[in-house]
Length: 356
Image (cartoon, rainbow, N blue to C red):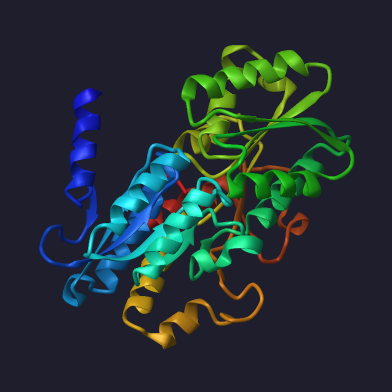
C-alpha cells in the first residue's frame, strides 16, 4: 500500500496521471477531470472521457484529457487544485465538488479561473446560489429530480410508507443533500426519514452503519436507501449475511456492478441511474469548446447560458427495476427513461460498460 501511495504522489508531483487519454509530458495543454472519490461510477466517466478524446481528436489539437482520482476528501481536492494552479500546461479543469460551499475549495476554483483556466463542475456542483461564479457550468444530473424519482419508486412499492434511512459517503456533499431531499419529497408524507448516515467512503463504516441503523430503528425501519454507488451493495451484503433481506426494501442511486448483480439476484428493488459516460464525454466536449472559443458548440451544450439555470447541462436519468417488477413507466416523469434490468444490461453492453 505504501509503494502505491508513493507512486500516486510521484505522478501528481510530475504533473502526470495514471489514467490518461492522450499523451503526457509532450508539451500538450491538459484538460483534467477530478473525481470526488474512487468508485466504479468513475470508470464510466473515464470511458466517456476517453471516447471524447478520440472523437474530438484532442491530440491533433495539442490537448490531452486526464482523470485524477482523489482520496474522497475535500482537503485532497483542494491540494490537487492548488497543485494544478502551479502548472502552466493546465488549460481546463472539471471537478466533482466534495463540498459545495467549502470556502477553500471555492477559492481554489476561482484562483484557477483568474489564471485563465476553464473551470466547470461535473457530477456534484458548487452551491449555485452563492458560488456559481466559481465555474462556467455544471455537467451532470439534476440530483433533486433523481431523488424524487427514486422516492416515487418507493411510494409505489410501499403504499403504506414507513421509516427509511439514507446512507452516503459524505453527508455534506451537494449531490448527497439534493438526493436525500428529493427522495424524501418523492416518497411522500407516509414515509419518515429516520437518519442520514455518512461513512467517508470507508467499506467497514458502510456496513457498520447499516447494522447500527437496523439496531437503532428496528421497529420503524422499512427501507434502506443507498445515496452513493457503494452504499446499496454494502446494505445488501449486510442484509444477506444477517438473513434480513425480506424485512426491508433496498433502493439505490447509481448502477454499481455489484448493485446490478444484486438486482438480478432479487436484492435491490429499484435504482435511479445517472449517465456518467455522458458526463465524461460532454465535460471534455464543453471544455474543448471553451478553450477553442467555439461559441457554436458551447451553445449546443448550454443553449440557455446567461439565463437563470442556463449554466446547467443535464445528462439525463434512468429508472431501472427488476425484470417483472410491478413498477411501470407511467409512475415516473416523461423525461426519465424507464428500463427493466435486461434492457439496461443491453444498454451497458452497447457502450462496453460494467456499470453506470
